[in-house]
Each structure stands twice: as C-alpha cells, then as structure tokens.
Image (cartoon, rainbow, N blue to C red):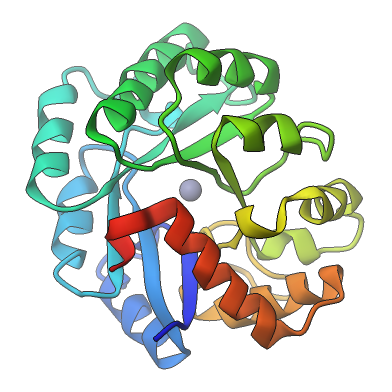
Length: 251
Ligand SMILES: [Zn+2]
C-alpha cells in the first residue's frame, strides 16, 4: 500500500526531543515513510534510533556546512551505513556558505559520493551555487541514483542532471510568491523523477514559522496545483517515483 512519502526531512534538527513527536504527528497526517537525513556525527545516533520505526528510511552523511567541525568521521559513517539499510546524506556542495572552506567541502563530498556508489546506496545531495562543478563531479563519481533535494538549479539543467541519475525534490518554500525559477524547474522534471519533501524544520510553507513533516500533504497539494494535476494522482506518482530512487529501502 502506498501513501505519502517525505523525500527529505531532518527529525534530529526539530527542537531537542521532539523528533519522535514530529514522527508520530506525520504518521497521523498520512505520511507513511520519511527519508530522515543526518548531517553530522552528532546526529547519526538519533537517526539510527529513529530507524527502529518502520516509517523511517535513515540516511547518514556529513553536510557541507559541517565539514570544518569534524575531523575523523569516516569510520563512524561506515559503521552506521553497515549497520542498517540506509542511504548517504545529506552530502553536497555550498558555495554560499560563508566561512566554510570549499576545497574541504568538495573532498568530503567526493568521498561520500564514492561510498554511495561502492555500496550501491542512493545519495541525498545539497547543492547551492555549485552547479557546474556538481555536473563535473557527478560525471566521475556519481552513484546510479541520487536526489537533488530542494532543487534550486535551473530548468535547463534538469535534463542534464536526470541523465546522470538525479531525482529532484521540492519543499513548501517553493509555494511562496515570486518563486518562478523553482516553478519552471518543477515543470521541467521528468514525470518519474519528481519528489516532494518538507526539509523540516527548514524551508516552511507560506504562513508557517517552521516546516514540520506533517505539512507534507499540504506541500504535495501546492505542487499538484503548479502542475495542474490532481493531488491524489500526484501522491500516487510520488510514491512510485520514490520506489525508483530508494529501491529496496522502501520495501
Ligand atoms: Zn536537508
């Protein structure tokens, strides 16, 4: 049976201790599965604990904003990946992140992309203002399947990235007025490569101070509106698309 799936959410970043409550609320709202990403060694144990709930698809990764804060993270990452069926993420590149060495970001990204490829796991990728370099790195290191979460690139780049193995997800923030670039990108995504996320607690819907995983049905309804598609048919399509990205992790 399918249902709603949140393609990218940070339960550990929801106010301390509230990750479990947020998970329960999301399930009550009809969210059947959630791709829960860690961003740093400090939150990987909670991601692993949350994975005891069958709704949670865990991902472990070192986010580009975190690369300067952690030295030797590779062994711990490998241990979590080996312990539970999981993806790599959140990993990526961010040229807008002030004070974080870009070369260090890229080195960590390459290590983790290769890990995803070697272990045949999907990767959850963050990219801000580094699209040209991302395309180059993917040509050399990409796993077969990866998600560009909160996709902020151009519509023109969508087919190039899709050929490399990208799925594309969008959060509630694209429903704010003036987000024409994101709307064009949503319409450019191949029908079987689109996903929807809350990125909770970041990127909230208009009118919300913070994103929450239980907002997912409202985000799906808003994106259905952009596409001129029935929300229920989009919900079913998104589940099918998630199966393509996540494979056995969604069984
Ligand atoms: Zn994220």
